[in-house]
Length: 230
Image (cartoon, rainbow, N blue to C red; front, side, top):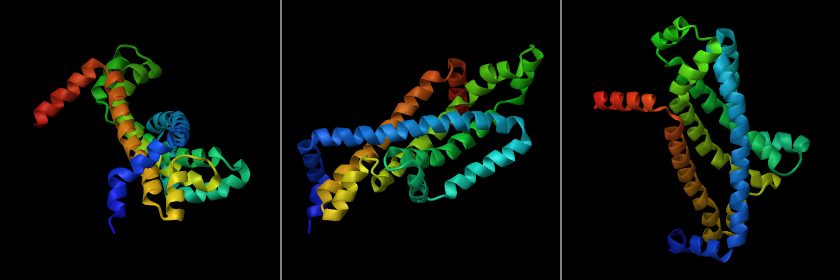
């Protein structure tokens, strides 16, 4: 009767401690899939978002494709592509990329569009080229919003990575599936709870990165805006 509560309290942790090597291997595989998928998504989404702010026609196409990608079930992507990509991590990474692109794309567009037009015009008046304005004005001010998109997509894709168990990609999903199959709360929670903790860890990591890459003048502006709002 109380076995789920007992497992939630200590059983899952005891199982991890008894299987440390396997746990570290599964966790590393899980993080590797998410990391590779996120990196590919960033490489795709950030340039696409910049292009969308420059060309209204491209914006409609890019944003429509990004929104459509979110409607495709992750398990469907894995099921359809593993016949071509084979068993292993590649189908899961593809699903992660598809799900990660849209939040990053949307926030890249929103972050650049929110930059004050007067600052862009000032840069143009100083003789800056389009690339210089992008690098020195627009992207620095858009970085907090872009990183918010990366944080959102990372949280989402840590969950998506669990489906990789169905195509032999490894990850924490192996223990979740094993726990469900054997009706063992200890094994199931040993796979699920570390995933939730990984979400929190990545969220804090990106928060620190965001603070590190945001120029001081922008941080001061954001703090001033917060104080005014308060």
